[in-house]
Amino acid sequence: MAENQTPAPPTPADPHEPSTDGAHAPPVPAPRSAVRSLLRLWPYAREARWRIFGSMAAAGLASLSVLAVPVVLRRIVDGPVAERDLSGLWPLAGALLLLGVAEAVLFGVRRVIVARPLARVETRLRGDLFAKLQRLPISFHDRWPSGQLLSRATSDLFVLRLFLAFPLVFLVVNSTVFLTGTALMFVLDWRLALITLVPVVPLLFFTRRFEAGYSTASRLAQDQNGDLATVVEESVLGIRILKAFGRHRTMAEEFRRHSAELRETELRKAGLLGNLWAVIVGLPELALGGVLATGAVLVAHDQLSVGTLVAFLSTALALRWPVESLGWLLGFAAEAASAANRYFEVMDEPEPADPPSGAAPTGDRGIRFTGVRFRYPDAPDGTPDLLAGVDLHVRPGETLALVGATGSGKTTLTALLPRLYEPTAGSITLDGTDLRDLPREQLRREVAVAFEDPTLFSATVRENVLMGAPDATPEQVAAALATAQAGFVDKLPDGLATEVGEQGLSLSGGQRQRLALARAVVGGPRFLVLDDPLSALDVHTEALVERALRQVLAGTTALVVAHRPSTVLLADRVALLADGRIAAVGTHQELLRSCPAYRALMSGEPELEGALAR
Ligand SMILES: Nc1ncnc2c1ncn2[C@@H]1O[C@H](COP(=O)(O)OP(=O)(O)OP(=O)(O)O)[C@@H](O)[C@H]1O
Picture 1 (tube, rainbow, N blue to C red):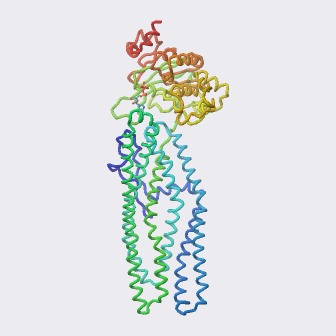
Picture 2 (cartoon, rainbow, N blue to C red):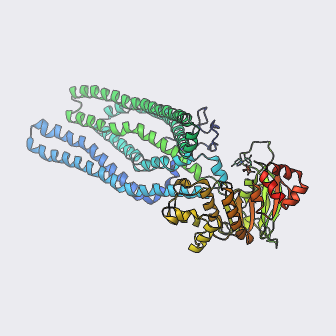
Picture 3 (cartoon, rainbow, N blue to C red):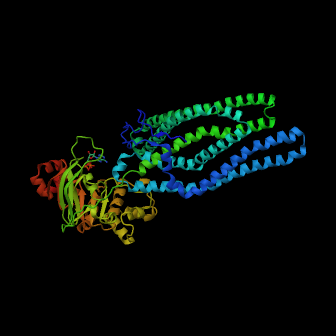
């Protein structure tokens, strides 16, 4: 197979161009040859190599048995038929029958021996991709639309399995059969053989051109498929919003647009394949006409036996399939090459290197941020760092509320503690040890998080809570649920064993928040990060949760993002985040007295004013 370049340079329709719907596209990958892309599958295909070679051998033998038919035919025509000797016909007819049966059996064997091992190869590819996605940092997931990942994990891997099972085998087998058949034709009659080879040069030229165009179109179709998957996923997850705002027609329009683009690309692929097919089928047919005419003349001049002409034509006809199949085999190979590229683009993404900080642990207790700076990788050039030198100390056992205007970076700052993002400069220590020096498992054990948006998984209530501490005892689970005031669990149809549905959508927002809180506190973490965890609760429940939380927080060092005065009152001290820095730290009262910015931030809260008056 000739090498080609995939993927194509960006075109206006290229999905790697910044998309208009706000999704950040994956980076443009470097061009790579199709053969090199496919060779990268070898470590995975290796375990099935003997089966693949066996499959090639079976398919090769089956195809060669087809090529043996003309040889037998020649003996029938020049022997029993020419000599009118019926007795000599039966053994040869039996040989033909045997060849037919052998072909059918061998093709069947080919299919059977690769099916299972290649399904295993696909499973391994998929497993490795999933594991890689789990390891990759959040910044990767921020950049890649989920549909692109979904399509790489499903349809692309299906294309790769199919390629290993069929096109790869037949590219090798059909090339071998073609070369053997051509050699046989030269043995039968070199003059006719030369005529059949005339189309080879234009065929090579067309094939080369086809490969380049088809690779580009394949890559585009696969990317568009990913975009389409993203639209479907977003509209299914956001179906409530779409319906509530009556936007389902807009989304349907969006779907139709992506769908039409994909259809166009698929039609372009079909057109390219059709053109190649026309050339691949048409040119050899012309050559065959030339062979027939020349052969007839040679037979008329006694320079060729009828049997040899029949055998030659049968051989040429038997080579039709290997030649004609070349078109779609190359097409499939190009498609598999771009599927492999798409797969390895994700697999090649660098994982966080986790270099240790090199700093010796200090006796400093609690959580300490020192000169912490952070900017999102895709932040526009020229914008200041979101966190521009945060210095903050949360004392051991203390609960510190973090407040600030919306968009000031509170959530981002808390996300640095469980290392969902890495600071671009500065350091964070937990009880004197730099975060980078803590093994991930230890970090996960010691730091628990509850976000404002409480994502649950399609599992039981118990399983969701146990995500916070897989080894927690039933008593600990019960205590965590009690702290989170999640008594509603008892009223669920199967109690703790109730399935909460995809993303926990069978529960109310407040119920989900309370389960997320229980998940955070179940392991009795030393450090707790709560990002406005009570926002969806009614005042009464919030007060109950706060009372229970106070007991949990007493033994824990906690950083709590607060939007409401009631949450602020949960804390021992408050830190105000403004312009990327900690602008003020103190107790609630102190800040109200001494910090106008804090006062301004809080002044819109009548509830707070009431609380302060008491
Ligand atoms: N994944 C992301 N990629 C790029 N920018 C982001 C990302 N997440 C947040 N931002 C930007 O960072 C800024 C701070 O966001 P963040 O969520 O930390 O603010 P916040 O103070 O918690 O806001 P709020 O009070 O509204 O929850 C915002 O301008 C936001 O657009």
